[in-house]
Length: 291
Image 1: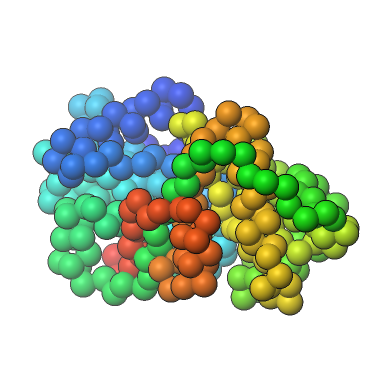
Image 2 (image 1 turned 60 degrees about the horizontal axis):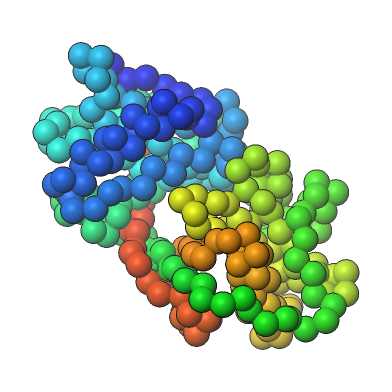
């Protein structure tokens, strides 16, 4: 078995290969696993983002690393059904950890779709502790939203806005300023995302980022500064995003929300979002796997 490493966003041919593996897994798993390699958001740009296991010239599994922060990596993987429980995932994981460790990483999260019986079986067999879950929520647009109150503006962020938006993001997500600045800068620079800032009379009060896939808007990092909450800004951001989606001919908006964030879940459900699936995150130390 040979493991190929990739440092950049996969091209169309490689993406098609990964999607083919996901389709092969769907025959057993009952669902098609999403392939969302996002190299642009990783904090360490020189670190490999994708690992593909090959045998006889054919791909039999892949693993990708999402690491927008400096303290942990998120690991997503898929192995074709006929090669499961034969050490392919373990080999991919060890390869990924060996190449992530030199960048200062020592812990990570194994990401498992809640629908995956085989994935949950691995986590149970390895006794990897559960940390949290995220729910994916979907909104189907049936009409253009009404106008929001005057003075609110949702505009594309610029690098000149970085200090202000990094401080806002750090406060909203209770993270350190350096991490927030790195993630925000990557989002602003990304060719695949649009980073928005919500302003009220020129004052930055909220942020969110948008990507597009399969005819839908995918929202990331929707947040309002703690000092500005309970003033309708989050709902206003949703209105403005939905307005832009409608005008662009997009009729579906997707986002992820932490299972413990009851206030956000209530907001999204009240707006019309419905839960479509859940993803489980299990924490581990690199040393556990011999890295």
